[in-house]
Structure formats: structure tokens, C-alpha cells
Amino acid sequence: MDENSVKRLLQTLNLDAFVEGLRASYPANEIVRLVRWMGEDLPAQIAGKPTQRPADARMKPRVLYLSGLEESAWYSPDRFHPVRVLEESFSEIRREVVQLLNEDWPLYTPKSAGWNAYFLYDVFGNEFAAHTAKCPHTWSVISSLPRARNAYFSRLQPGAVIAPHHGPTNASLVAHLGLICPNGDCAIRVGDEERGWTEGKSLVFDDTFEQEAWNRTAHERINLLYAVWHPDLTEVERTVLGALEDKAKLLVEGIEGNAARGV
Image (cartoon, rainbow, N blue to C red):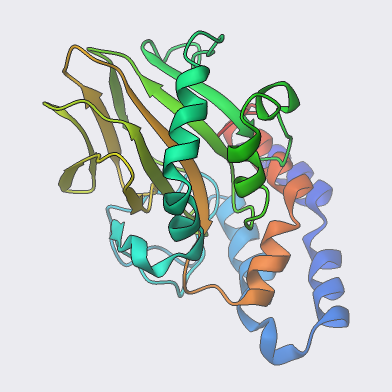
């Protein structure tokens, strides 16, 4: 962004007032990192002059980097309560997604040939009510869990390849619950490691590391993709970050130049 665009975005975000609101609402010892992230680190990142950078150079968050959190490409699914809850509902979720196979599944992006998404809610907190009504059990489980970014069914057609890319922030991680997983060369690479999917089991990773995926089989692959908060975040930090949907939209539009639906 040019200098004028940076100034306009910072004025619109009004981060100084946001930080003052934090100080008025929470004990100082509970918001030390939030004050630094929102009052110092974020303005510097928006201006293109970050004061904090990932220790692991493979991490390249497109929108927001939060310093002081564990940095790893992969995480054990056992560390996340939402993962366990969704895995326990695997059979019913899979049954519902099978019933959706003849529905209209839009491309994830106009350029993502062979990669389709059936959104439940997007990164700005918008529910896709026409979709959630058709998978009521899945939605009842998903809506009972903390929202960290988005949730959708991800469909990768035979022969499809998702090109290498980076996610928006290390504040939340990405979980994939395998629902329909073909045998053969169908996998995802995050950082330097490739892993395949297993039906009923989850993968959890930090998508600010470069990732790519492919399905070189004759059958489609379908996962439930959803976000979980980084395990190092405190309850207060999760609450505050989860309430920033309006600022998240402004950040994505301002930094990336579009209102990306699913990020």
C-alpha cells in the first residue's frame, strides 16, 4: 500500500481507541500482548515496517502476525478440544456431506479449478444459512464451538491441485477432518512435510507456512475445514480477537485489496 492508503486504513481501524478500550475493560496483566499486538505490531505491519517477524522464516502471514506464540507447521490434534468434539461426530457429519454431493458447490475462488467449497460461515462471521439448514447436525456441533476464522466443506476433485500459498494469520490454525478420503496420491504439504488424510481423523497446521495440496487419484476428496485458536492464546486474547470481525474485514480489504470471502 502507498503512504496515503496506510494512513487511511489506520484512521479507519482507530487502533488507539481500541487499545484504550482494552485498558478500560481488562486488568493490565491480562492484555499485555494484546496491547503490544494492536498498539504497536499491527500498525507497523500495515505500514510495511514490521517490528516483529517470525523466528521461522518459512512463516509468511498475509495479514497479521502475532509474536510470542509457538511456531510450528504441524500440531498434534489432541491439543484441541474442538477437534475431539468434531471427530466424535464424524459418522453423522459424513452422512450429511454425502447428501450434499449433488448440491451446488462453488469454486473456492474463481481461479481454483477443481477445488470447491460449501461454506458454513466465513472469516467475517457470516453464516451461510441456506447451507447450514441442509446439514443440521454438523451445524449444531460447529456452532457450539468457538469461532476462530471460518468453517466449510472442502471438495478436491480428481486431478486437482491447490497451488502453494500462505494463510492470513498465525492467531488461528487450520484443522481438516477427513470425510471422504481416497487411497493413493492425495495429500497436503505444509512447510517441508507432506501428510495424507484419513477418514474420521484430523490434521492441524499453521497455514502461514507455505502449503499446497493435490488429488492425483480417480476419486474426489472431501474434508471439513475449520479454524481453531492457537493454543498459546489466553481466554481473554481469544475473546478479544474473536470480537474483531469488523476490523478483520477492514484489514483484509485494506491489506489484500479485496473482501476475500473465505480467506
